[in-house]
Length: 346
Image (tube, rainbow, N blue to C red):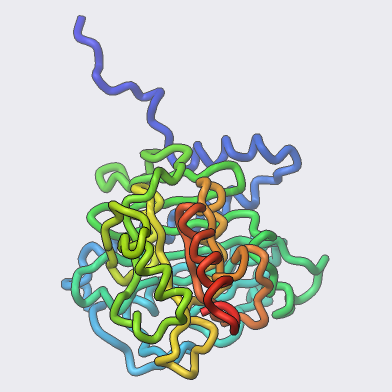
């Protein structure tokens, strides 16, 4: 008799995996599980558009400017609406906050209100869409701090240590959903034939570093400490040997590669833009969710002075420098900044 080469017992869908994660939370009600699955569904919908962007009339820009002062891409708008419309009516959330909107989005009065808050960057790297480059979605989930009633903006301003789950969806040659709920990092690849995310990367741990990822075009505008750190990564003056430079320009994609292959990504503040003296990346929507993933995978994320996860946002659109990846490499930049810079993190 010929044995079926497919062992169905080894196929783990994202729904099954998330349900099994509940075992780590004896008091779990299943609400967080369903939020994660809602986000996986949103990822499938967004992926269906990114994979046919040139045909779907979603390339290019709208006439709108978002809160970041950036021109809104058509796919940005689609991703933002997809996530909000798939999550705002479920009774699981008390509010949402998106990088694309100046204010948080309360749950409409006609829908029940839940106990969780969702923060997200609907389409990181959207300026790369027109050039067929990788892009992604980043999200974080917090418990609300108020007991009941309308949610307030202050409830969103929690440090990353308070995250109950975070993750990202990478849209590239394949679509991957990577998340943590505080018990390791797990990656799922979308099988387009069955329309489901299947476990492909269980219990991800960052391996020894191979790459460093940074936009060297801004190097002249960095602090002395960050410039010295960059030279260290390039092997100059007794620095580390053997690292290769890889930079895509999409935070999700650069982070994802380094998560799987080992490395450090950094986006310092720079003196070139006086309007962004404390960095460009958003703490709530980008830095903190990815920092939670990095830590769960054995890595570390810093603003140059200390852990990103300990920084409390001062506003919904708080910006920060970010150094993230292998723990030893991130701790090294803190050392350079501490020794060579006298005016804080850059």
